[in-house]
Length: 167
Image (tube, rainbow, N blue to C red):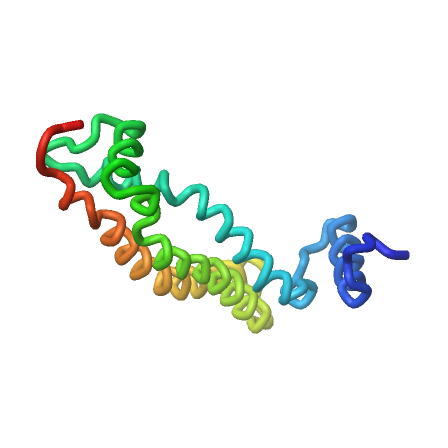
C-alpha cells in the first residue's frame, strides 16, 4: 500500500522501515535515512528559516557590540535606524557567508553517524560519546570561522553611520 501519493515508490520502502522502527521503539540508523532528502531538504529548510531569523541576529549583534556611545536605544530603534541608513539590505549584511554555516549541521550529523556506525564492540553510550566528540570537533571547525566572518560583516555600516544627530 502507498503511504502517500507524493512519495516516490522507491522511497516508500525507506519510510515504511523507519515507521516500523519508530512504532517498535527501535533506533533509526544512518542506513535507514534517505540521504537525498537529508542533504537537500534539510539545508533548504534551514536556509528559509535563516532568511527570517537573520535580521534579528544582526540587530542582536549590533546592540551587543555597542560600546561607549549607544547608537541604538533598543531593538525597535536599531531596526528603524539600520533600515533608514542602510536600507533593507542592511539587515542582511553577512547573510551569504552565514549560509555556509548550514553545512555545519550536515557535517555534524554525517560525522556522528559514520563514526558511530564504524565503532564495533563498544556500548551504545561509548559509541555516542566518541561519535559526538568527533562530530563536534568537525562541525565547530566549520562553524566558528564562518560565524566570526559573518559577525564582522554584520558590523559593517554601523561605524560609518555613527556620526551626526541621533535620529
